[in-house]
Image 1 (cartoon, rainbow, N blue to C red):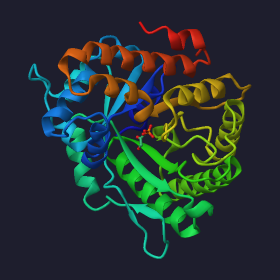
Image 2: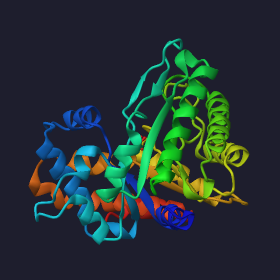
Image 3: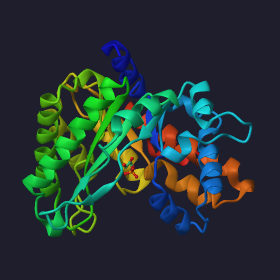
Image 4: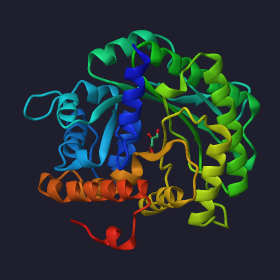
Length: 342
Ligand code: 13P
């Protein structure tokens, strides 16, 4: 695959004013989210729910790409077309989650390493055939009991991310490299900064060692935040400054974009943080965007609750969150915009 194609796809995914919808929850994760709103998780309810998101009128104005789960990339819309085609028809780029989840890391209590490299070359070839043009692999970095992550955990995950990313580029698929430092715990924002900086240094070192070209990839990191249970919660400006400082010190300028995950932040706060980052004085060599699951889907899922009658209202809520985050990409998110549900 020529590098120009990978680079063009990566750039399209972080096109100004647009972002990525992560709709790649595994069966276990979506099951928990459905249970919280009283919906049974079946192949059919998952299909209906995701179809509702993908057919939201006007969504392509704000959403550049969607990350799918293996089940969804094989499903069809009511009208018969594959869901992948429903996205592609609107100019939305289909992507695929290819990791097999985080598993306990031997020798590192409380920490995990992400699995899924076995057979990945063959799976990527099939996914490309099915229409995927980008992929995602999530590494999970915890601060067990407030301690910084171990070197072993960081190195093992960086190595796996680099092997995954190299295989993606070989297959003509843009890798989204996602090292997530969890916000679970009572650690301070300074601890989160230290863990994030150390992780990103190791990740980009591994990517270099494995010959991954930065122009043809995207980074999907956590924002630098106070732990969810930390008694002192850093403010929006502090989070924005710490996050951008961390990125400047670790992410090569050749990477086209950084698409943040939301990580369990309240949806409006995730938007406010992104907005503030885009308002900080430059220079900023990369696009700063979003690739949210919960912060885009929380509101529509709570409205939908499995009832076809509420699809229109749920779609409007999804469009609204997408519009707010698109505005945050330009630093133009305001309380007035937040209140203006179309
Ligand atoms: P959240 O935005 O809910 O953190 O999910 C993003 C994601 O894709 C996690 O892998």
